[in-house]
Image (tube, rainbow, N blue to C red; front, side, top):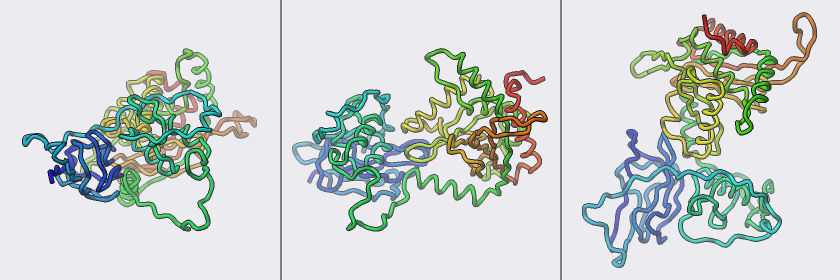
Length: 418
């Protein structure tokens, strides 16, 4: 037997191990070189690992959720005499890359004939992002039956949207929202692995170690909304519309000039607070894999439209699993927003090692007393949390009040400080 032992590669950035997220092969399977065999995750990124050689799988190491140390055996191949063995000096494996770029979603409408036919099952490697693979698994869709419109036949989100929209009889599963048959299990156990595990660990650590001080204030954003509407009306036809979030980020960078104690990272290992002059604003972003926080770096030096463009770019990269480690780390303060689901108030958890987080709640029109009369005004609450070890309650409240003033008088965002 001519065996080749493929070891967990060094994924860089000081990684010492990686977690198995999903195997795409099993003992006894025949695989070809460059075929996807396993998805792994480090604390920095999800990585699709291709087969370094062609052969038959003899054994694999680790189940989903298990961690495998760098340099430890990951999978053993029987290459067979016909396939030959790698050169003696050949490396054990080449560094796998993060999932290749995804094509932009297609705008092709779903036609009746498309819904009525079932795509043939294809063979060979099925290329798709880990997020799309997980979504397909949850929807009961075999990705081998999905036609990919991306580069090299890669399945992109739009392809999966079409597959999910098909009737269950066509895609071979239950209709969405339909319960399993009565003979199925009453409960399902879901192992906490991958990004969900990392999120759980970090959230638990933040709540356990950081004494949170919460402060909620309502803000009259009527004038801010009027300004936003005016700016959108003046934008070029090919420019995306401006949301409230970039305006809040711009205002926050101005406020932090007067409250530098809130633009701080806590280095617990050295027992120091690292105060930053630049505002690297984290934007909490919901993705198919869970919550990620891409970073708008040096936000204080960007205009509102530049901030808006950067938020859109980073959010798309985070959702398509293409964001780099540099784009997901290094924030000095975080802004989180649930948009239309924002509710009245929230208690956001601090993104350690930061010491402050600002949450935007839903903006609604309400009757208010305004300049001595009842008027309909647009009101939005700011829900904030601060690390009470390093930010006193008075300073936290004063910072939010300063942000409130700037949002209620948005011209201040653009006027140089005297």
